[in-house]
Length: 315
Image 1: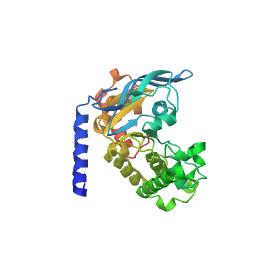
Image 2 (image 1 turned 30 degrees about the vertical axis):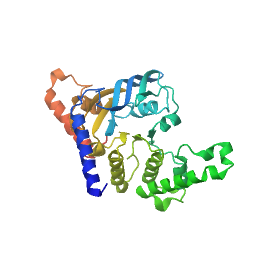
Image 3 (image 1 turned 90 degrees about the vertical axis):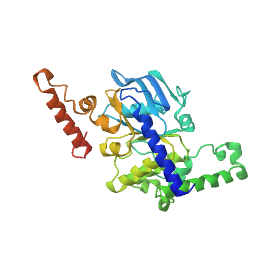
């Protein structure tokens, strides 16, 4: 396929996704046309605190979905539950119709759902290339008997190395391939984690605060890489506090507060949702609305939320 045809195909695909999402109701737990993840009655408690209490959630295939909410809303805990890094107290969830209940995190990754972490998990005393090679699955040389016979795994290792070099070039880390991962900047580590996740050739990538600790010079690069994942047909679910990023790249937004999903919709619709304004600002908690002009209060809260999105305040 030539560049023009590929561009047209990508544009058409993006347009069809937008049309699909316009038919989705902007309500918590909204059903999706082609959900890759479906979860029901997922709860997780820590002592007397209910961190996650999600009645129903669906993630649309092939789009970028943002999971947002104030600190302590339960976003990362939900990530941990979906990917097998934590065990819920109750609930069911599936990937492509296959249950993930009781499935270990490494097996979840093998099924095509991988994640990155807010605090990067690179192996500091291994080289960047070695970190990449660890992300490859099904390596024959990992088995004791096969490891004794180099002819059984050498060809596969060369293929993995070629794939790793291709990804490092794509993420502009090829010049760092022989450096220790611990020498990378915070932003470069984020890029390395994203590149390493692609060694699995995943269908769904979950990014936990990809912009946290990243300097402004690398933010735009990260944004473009996330968009490129969607253009390849992958599904992206990310947690983020940077509202500029959410508005820029997400096709759909899910909002959590106090462990529950309180709103869903397009970025534009969500930013104007009173439930979202209340979740972030708490504007309705300490005031008797019967004694105030509710419209004026909502306008004030909306203005503050927009200021946060413009980077003038911190959520």
